[in-house]
Image 1 (tube, one colour):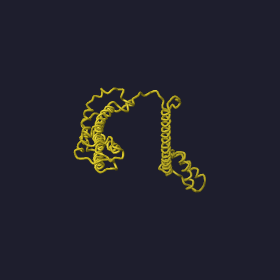
Image 2 (tube, helix red, strand yellow; image 1 turned 45 degrees about the vertical axis):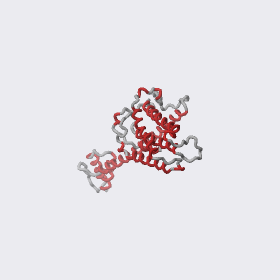
Image 3 (spheres, helix red, strand yellow; image 1 turned 90 degrees about the horizontal axis):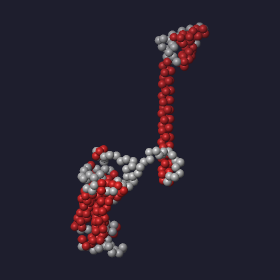
Image 4 (spheres, helix red, strand yellow; image 1 turned 120 degrees about the horizontal axis):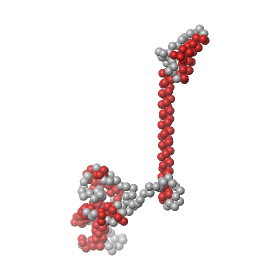
Length: 296
């Protein structure tokens, strides 16, 4: 049941009201005063109802008591009422848990999350089956309709009690009841592992943090190396395209073709070098070789 309730509440979609709420700081307590107020307030209601049913439920509903029944005795209606009431209060308290910042309308946006109300309905149906047909398997006894109404009444009372709890001012809760708050040392070096006086948990936490940081730096170096390889390849491709375009004869280059002697070859090379000074040195050498091969 707790797993289903956690799943139902965890799937609540975010609302615009979250943007209006201030964020929690690093020194905020894990259990705030509002959280303590809600926990203590609902605990008082549920414990009062359960203890009242255990010690006075048999007289209230005029049924046989199960307090002194032997262990191997069949399940009775007394403790079945206690079990059923506890589940009903928990189910209806899930509706209160949808709004934890003092909101009054706990039904706002209820049908915007199908997972929540489907799980709630399925849980309620399973509880009915367990109580009415569980028998020896779940140590329950079938309940009459008026006993079911009483259990449902105690469950609905959780919603009304939630409104009363929300009416309690937060200022009435002592600051000492807020658990988990503390100050942050701004001058502390998280990379300093030479603190021999630190407890084992804090020291191991720092070591794990350093390992994670080192792994992240290694991954960044790998990514940077891949970027360098890709840039080197692109530079090579662009340089090769420049070479291919530069070795083509242009309008400014005049190649003197004379196949009758080596003196004409030297003159042709000199004409290319003097008249096409825009070529880079590597391209000039390539042009020399091609012109000499054409002349020969």
